[in-house]
Image (cartoon, rainbow, N blue to C red; front, side, top):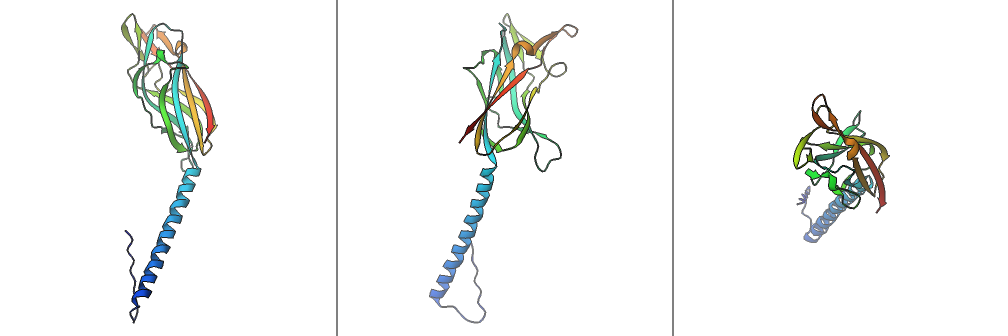
Amino acid sequence: MIKVFLFCNSYALPIMKMAHLVKQVLLSVLLISLTGCSKDEVDEAKDRTQVTITLKTSNQISHSIYLDIQDIQFKVKTDNAPVANWLSLHTINQGVCNASELNEDATLLLVDDFEIEAFYLHEIRLVLGDNNFIDINNVLHSLEVSTFGNARPSNVIETQLNSKRRYHMVIDIDLDKSISYNQEENMRVLNPKLYTAIRQIEY
């Protein structure tokens, strides 16, 4: 609600003149508001872009491998920060998935057309939880990620995002190279080997 207060010194304005003055003031306020909003919206849209990220795997392993997907993050450098920081994206389909079933034709959607600023991207990383397993003869064996493994594998991508674009990024995990057996600790270790493909699509 816009409130307009009119003050007169020593005389009363005629009714028609008062109504005309009120109309002019209201139109001026409305024009200023619309002009300001439009400029802000244009400036904001000018520096933003949209990102979609999917996950697939490459493997020859006959066993099923389950990964606990928690987040996808970009390492970006902003104008206000002295160093690059990790930016969490709006990750969907979180939780445990059968990564062995993912391939070129059956990917897992992790980020769906998410709008962000057109940052310069240094790295992309996958954040895993603790519930990662390999199924051997219908028995689930835990895959260690906290000490010998890696719960936050990343790729250096060094890519400048352009505004008013759509980007489709595909993270490919080579499962054959990601799992090893530590004989001394008697445990299976998960250290995901990632490969990232980036495709730019214009609006």
